[in-house]
Length: 403
Image (cartoon, rainbow, N blue to C red; front, side, top):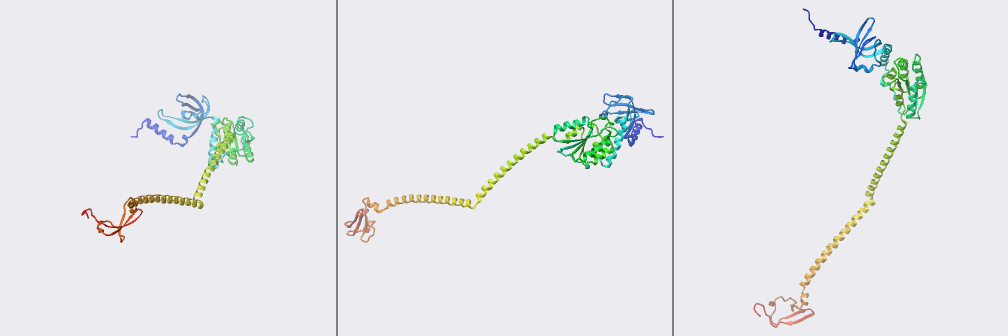
């Protein structure tokens, strides 16, 4: 018996088949809008139909940012999206990523084809992008002579820097001959040795902006030696010129902001740099003044003259110290001498004699210290304070025997 599958398994299998088909994952489908409903969740449910059939479609809320018009019954549109199966209902439908009106859809398809072609040729490669001069003074403008774009650029330039020179090449920016006119403008301005060129116009539909999606314009921008800022349409508009140019600006006013440096801000920066430089110079000078002074002090400290003076001062200090030590020792010795003199004076025989004592010696000059040295009849000499006396011993008496 053959295998039996559930409805869900079959639907899931068919969905995988749809998802694996490359053509169905990124497909353009054109048709008439029918049964269009804006859901409270933000999703848009509708049907695409033509004389041969219908297909259900849904655009989720997350993709609605690219929708530039309100969908209504009967509109001819081109839907870019992927075809897949809604498993619950078992039906296929297109999940829309972008929706554009049919006339614009053909142009959009041409836009995508040219974009791929030029990208493969390398015209969008960042390595070819030239830097926009920071302080441009000569700026070329390739746009219509009348209109908001040129006025916006003039107003921004006058406000930011009245010293910048603007060179306008008035050209067509819409219509059959616009692309050739833009190319002539780019080449003319490129020959004038300008700092940068602004190429652009105000916003509009894809049909209005189509001149900036032409291949000849893209090639002219790529071959231009002068850096180019593209400023086409509003912020949400994107053209081939934006991809090829050296810098994209979302609006002509923004292009002027990028190209023209603010003179007052520039002047303020110069003033600040001047103050910073002056402060740095003063700090630098003071720093090296102090260093020079320290070096001078070091030179003076280690100069022969200063070293000689230092040695002389050292010798003088030693001399003073030696003198002080000498006087201290001398005073100490004087004091000790006085003490010894007093002691010696106290022990001096002359001092004793002056107080009534006499110095006794025999005829031989020997000092008589004990009675045992004398006997009766010996001659002795007595020395007193004012002279000498010769005497004879009449009697000798000892303390112990009474002699």
